[in-house]
Length: 249
Image 1: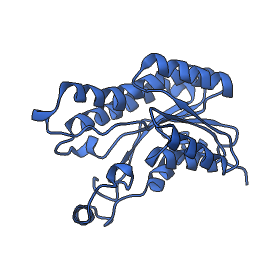
Image 2: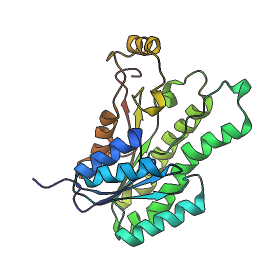
Image 3: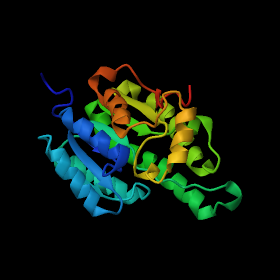
């Protein structure tokens, strides 16, 4: 049976850990050559690349800050020059900036938007020229359940992720005629490094408010991303797929 993404090249930002790593592994198993990006820690990125290569595919890592427009443009040009194509872009890189607004520093607000929202713009803009020339592309943006329902202490993060939804729908309209789809996946509470510090009492509370009775797993988010990145999703664009166990409906 032919791998559905065989011959394709996928770029997953923030792909060295958590949801991004699960997405990268899922796309690699589907046959794609995967490039992951990371901002700082080389060790986890190298480990992720080694794991991806275990699936028999090509994998590599690029270090750059998605919030830096020039670094992003240069890195993606380098990837395209090396790989000769770019079929899939998964905008996953993000940073959690929490705090009540009355205590939130200006620089923290700016960092939340720069990485979580402006970074999506930078990567998409840099990738679009190649996709438009090929008249094919799949762009999947990671947003969040808090973009839809809000959350105390996460105004900056929720605002940035809500912006990703508006950006996704606008981009879907702009590039549909070029064979490019743009969609978003909105995870709920997921078991990652970011939630590793949640104690048992908090986990019990989450289980009580999530109809599915548990937190999600990175692999469950990756499954949704894989579908939207696949040829099967050719007629799906501008959509926000909520994967949250019923936390938000």
